[in-house]
Length: 292
Image 1 (spheres, rainbow, N blue to C red):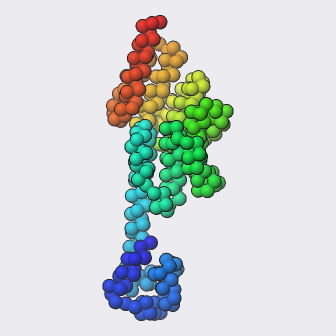
Image 2: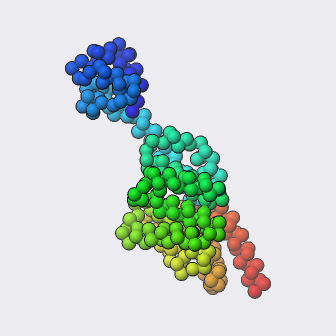
Image 3: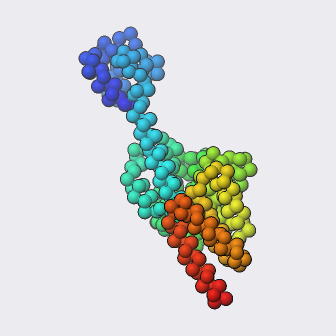
């Protein structure tokens, strides 16, 4: 609430606290509001604002604008993370002071993005756990929001990269259960985040050579992309499907088709990371066939 706007309007109109509060509340109540930010009841605040030609909404405009701006910024960062633009994400997160984020959902989003990025770029375990603990132990203690399974994704990625596979398995099983539940319930409101869970779980299962589970998740992800008309994750899902097909020694025609689809979706989404990875995968595949 922009109390400074309220005080500035009162002073501009040269209305004393005594005069403004007369018949509405005590001067002490008004003084506590102006000096200490202690907001009176809505009925009192509306009457005080009316005398100054203001509305309560006008006092909240800046805060609402700030929340909207922060949400847009974090959503943009989240999309960049989905496209593996880690340097862009790192720089953007470093520009944000979490102390300036008042809204709990946005604080959770910030800590989730920060923690997942650190997991993906092999950040310090203590730093990753600190970010995720803010969600699990404080902001989402009841573990009811989408950010809890997203935290499990980050922890699974971290432990997988540390080769602590039992711990990675523990967290990815939780993520897989959350994915199954969301798909059964048709709960696709947070479909981009659901795609995040699907992709990383599919990727993890591929590292375990459980291609049946991995490919099943990939198909779920592709279907969800189609239903929601989004393509952010299609390049990565198609790349993973291609890598799985090569590992499973699938027919050359199928592999070439998947490679072509991967490159096509990477170009549509301007995902240069996947485009480069697909080119390298194609070279390795062709060389392996030549020497087979």
